[in-house]
Length: 208
Image 1: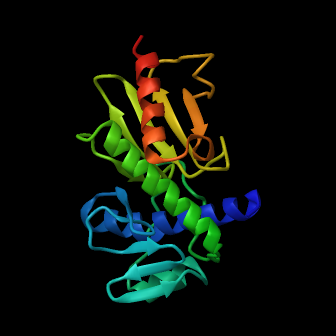
Image 2 (image 1 turned 45 degrees about the vertical axis):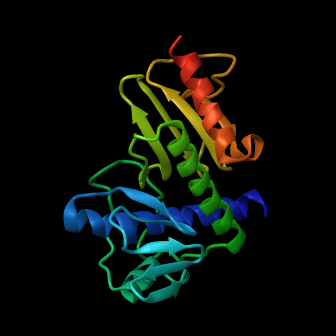
């Protein structure tokens, strides 16, 4: 799979996450949080609408991801809602945009979120792990440490999935190789235990 295919599929899934999952949930109960679910991600309050690889699951309906955002929302029986009044960033996907998702890209993204969720659970079992629709990453913020930890399925910094450690104060050089702290591609780290070990190393260095 080439990077452009993955990038386009990730953007499409990000748009669905915002407009069809988080947006309607926010209109209903004021909650934009999402969470990893089997094969992908879904609204915070499960059971509820979710993405399973290349399908939108709404109740007993499994709707292939294709057509416009509006047509997908109609098929799922939800009123799509943008979140531009909640945050400034996002996928930049509109209701008339056509959703196309490569199956291999969907698998890779789902695996990244699942591994990130498991790694954060291993690292900080009592922390609330949230998949935020704005940057489309799963993470935690540890206020006592003043550090964020998480996994992104890719973004403008790196198009491929990566784990990050983001101290609230600037750290430069060595372990901290990114503008926001430290980042390592999941393909380099491996499994959830290795990702959790990366978080632990970052915590130790950030708190020195």
